[in-house]
Length: 638
Image (cartoon, rainbow, N blue to C red; front, side, top):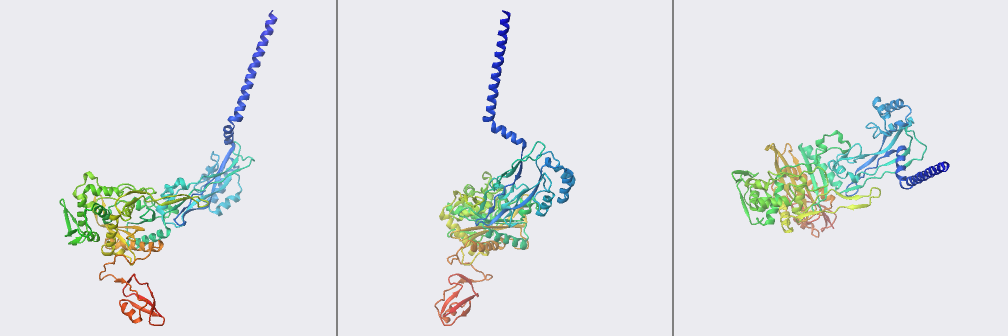
């Protein structure tokens, strides 16, 4: 009986052990199955991370080109030094030789080659190496010392467009301008050379894997490099001639908001931005600088009064005695003694401050400020550049008669150049306010195929086409007959407005310190091009925008005529000449006349004949355009 119980107990134990063993075996099989099927990728990745290493290959940054494909920012190939400390046998020898070649401190190099890390980048001394230095390092043949191809940002035009393009840091990250604003588009995807090593960093004899980098997207700007070079040249000339504190020029297509050119002084070289102060490299004046606009702002007041029909350009008059009293404050005209009785068109031509005070009074605070707000003043324009300012306007609830008066002619408020160009573009393009932009398209880096084209974005309609046409007429008259004569271009229809703004410091106006500006556009009846020029405190010259800035704007517009292929016209306003000006008149057509008739007809010009015969068969220049009297006219007889 006892024996049977003993064997029964053994059998139960064996059965128990067997069941437990089967359960454990099944659990192991399930676990192995789980590892092999469900967790394989994860565990394989974790295992590989223990012995997989990467030598990074930096991607090329996307290029930046102008509207015609001219390269403005690109990359040049450089070489950088990387060490794998675990693969270096003699750290002291490697550190000594590398420090000798690079001309760096031995102890610093020793820290690099003995650092407790899988891969160590030697910088800054090991970045962007010259090829002769790279060859010397390569000739050492040390294990664990690698030379990697990298790219360095390069700006072919140096200082040209530098504030717009910006610059990149040592790791090719955008730090300013377009480089910063569009950094995520310009930055490519880095590649790598993958290799395998043991826990001590020794390289294993396994196949290396090469992952190619992907370049960033190419940005096509709305900038025209030929126009940009023209304004850069004008700014250089202005700095040389007038030694201003600052200067800027901004050009835009008024029908789209596309920025065609933008530059300021002082400037810097994007290739060597470290050599300049942060105040210079981070201040793109056309979008950053705020100041009292002066008389160029009168365009806004004028357009508001014409839209509201509070004035009539041709029938309403204003008598200017040289000053006007507003709530106990006297506001003077620039002309001592005043202009006398003028039509409102003449008030605009003469840039008469008291006259514009009167125009502002016809509008009232709320109406004028509603138009100023509608034109976008007091807010950022939304241009695709970093560092834009908003400007400062009066609080409408605190505006009295004096604040209304000064605002009417651009004093007491603060705006940016880009705000002014945007607003004036709306005033002359039919009333449409556009968001200015500077990147026109995104292109695939390898093929330049179009990814996306940026379309103009209209924010709102501020005034009617009828009002806009009156504004254009008045501003063309300013250039033909008023303060903007120095911007007049014979045989082309030019409109514009001068500005002479006294600068403010610590709440007080500075004596003899002005920002002289000019806003110009052409053709005056259907504008294709608008340009703003501002010169801050020029030296040794009469302090008027019409004297300093208007001629500069004229030169820029002459360049635009050639670059944009704007055709000459003979239907514009004739310039009102004084005895100081060279007299121009329409050249009559003498083709088909006899020599005697042609001589009498062209009595105010010099004539040079060629050919035989008595009948004029060809003339140069062509008839129908303005030509300075006394100029030589070439006539061919036959």
